[in-house]
Amino acid sequence: LGRRRVSRLAGVLPTVNMFVHRLSSRAAGAVRLWNGEPARRSTPAPTPELILFEYEASPWCRRVRETLGVLGLAALIKPCPRETLRAEGAFGATSRHRPEAAAAAAEAGASSRLSFPLLVDRTAGVTLSDSAAICEHLWSLYGGGVERPTLDQALNPRRRTLLDFPLLAAPSALRPWPEAGLMLAPSEPNQQPLLLYGCEADAGSRLVREALCCLQLEYRSQPRPLSAPLPALEDPNSGFAAFGARQALEHLDRTHRTGEALGWLAPLPSPNLGEARMHPVLARLLGR
Image (cartoon, rainbow, N blue to C red; front, top):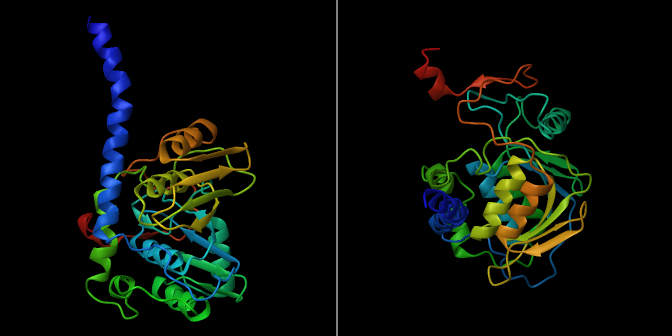
């Protein structure tokens, strides 16, 4: 009898876990009032060659993803999850895209240290590393014919306010787990980028983006309205294509994942290949 109960519990746990993740993911979209859906356009959306280095849990990266979504712009996403929370800019040999991001930033003189988001616009020939500057750039060059929603103007104003960070960070506070697009998880690299049809505000799309981020799998993001069947993931490396977060997550775990995500207390990588700058709050707590 005891074994039967354990067996039943083992079968129920994945369903309960998925329910909790979906619920918190929906709440994360609600606190941003479901911003990020493609806006009305009077002209066809342009197709610039955009490469975005980012990680899902970053508040500032969220601002850029929302802007890409509102403008309906596709972008090649190169996820750069963290290997440690002890210092900003640190990364080791297991980081797949951070070395490329650091080289791109240094070449363009975009920043004295590696920070995210980092946008490489090959069409315009520019590299930008500040979220406000990136959003301004996207609207200036690719916002023609777009009826910008009042909600997006309020949540992502051109001038920073004291409410910017709390509102942008709220979704991450609702999903604080390392595997929620924050910390690196070991994986098999993909030879070709995956394709994700999703929406920034969609709960299922968020779960798939989080997994792609932790696994460092580069993918092409194609914004879709919330009314569309979401998310849809295509993996040209294996021929996989399906609608729905559960199927996509199962595929990523089965095909690409080779281990669990690093924890909150992960040490500095050794050797550290990046510029390590201890977070000021952590430095104060440690008396440094």
